[in-house]
Length: 113
Image (cartoon, rainbow, N blue to C red; front, side, top):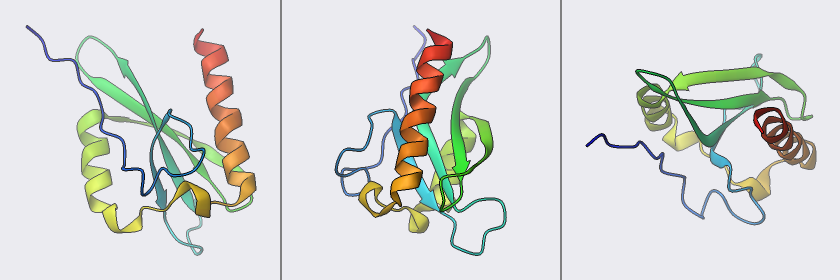
């Protein structure tokens, strides 16, 4: 019997307040990161014939998207492990970033429906 991969969300310590259930982790790369400050990884798993994939969005402090990304499940696990000291809380995000994440989740739900 095949095992169905289910990613483990960060604890309520990090995904506090009114954080959407679709958010798996929030990583703060710091204010000097040229490619975007926040990586928000989504909990939705997409499967193909061989692998499980997770996606996310890269955002600036102003909520401007620097693009989306997709990684294999084991790559997400390794990335999260490397960045475990850079997690940030949902409530500490700027309102523009929260709005961008909510809008992106709504858009992705609409497109995949």
